[in-house]
Length: 107
Image (cartoon, rainbow, N blue to C red; front, side, top):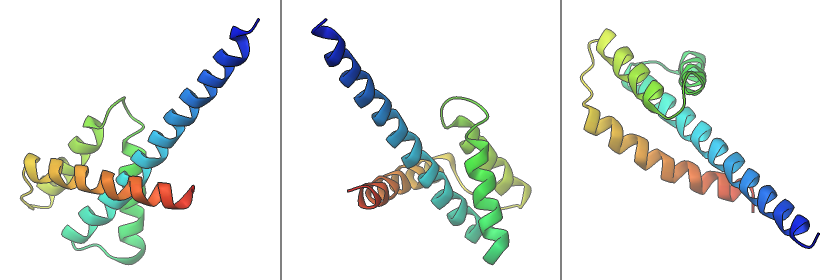
């Protein structure tokens, strides 16, 4: 029986860790959507709506490939050249920014 409380605590920490990673990814995707919207010449509500689309696109499949594919397709459809390496760099940079923002929101 001593193992049960320890196991429950471990499960709670594991769940909290997954929830935090989800919040960070969602925040990164919103920031990424805003960055992409600006590159596409969108502003105001149109930019926010696009950022929400990017966040929603991450729910299509596990991993971030669905987000990467959406952005590259959208840039291509608009005739905007963004390389995969540029996008990967932006995604990594904004993940770090999102992590800092989430940490600030949840001291």
